[in-house]
Image (cartoon, rainbow, N blue to C red):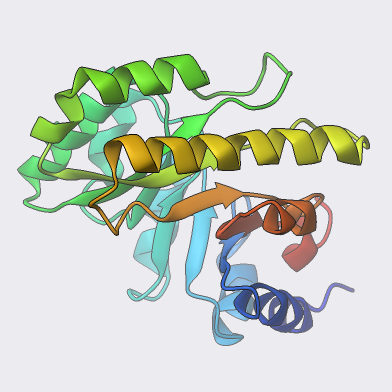
Length: 222
């Protein structure tokens, strides 16, 4: 039987000792399972389906910080804009425009990460390095006062090849540093590099991750 409390304790100690933030991936998990993690001190949870997130938000403690980590359709932004703590999966300028619109409607600023596609699999979402840089160079984001770009997110290839995983994370870390210098040099808020999940978070941290998204290492395999 999975001991969620012990898993949270171990992961939080590992992450905090390396100045890394832990996001517990709670998609498809029950409120009672999430509460076990909550009662162990965890406050940041990641979800990837807007409707499921809204339902959980209404049932669970108000001080939970909800991060959206899955592919987000533009027509779903309005359902989460009033409360979401961060959208980690921003993958197009059109999505940014919708987030700006909905955040303005709710008179709040939504922190966001640009999702970069670093894996080989075509099923993975995210922008290419080239597309992300083109959006930043275009300057439209500067006019989006209700959306704040706080960093980057990436998902590595699902593989047993540790070297490949390391190369992907290293490449994202290098891109993070490059665009920080070019576009966010004066903005301290651009500081988050979200990479690493249950199978590869230790490699990600070694390569510079500041935030990991962990599910099965907390709740057990699905």
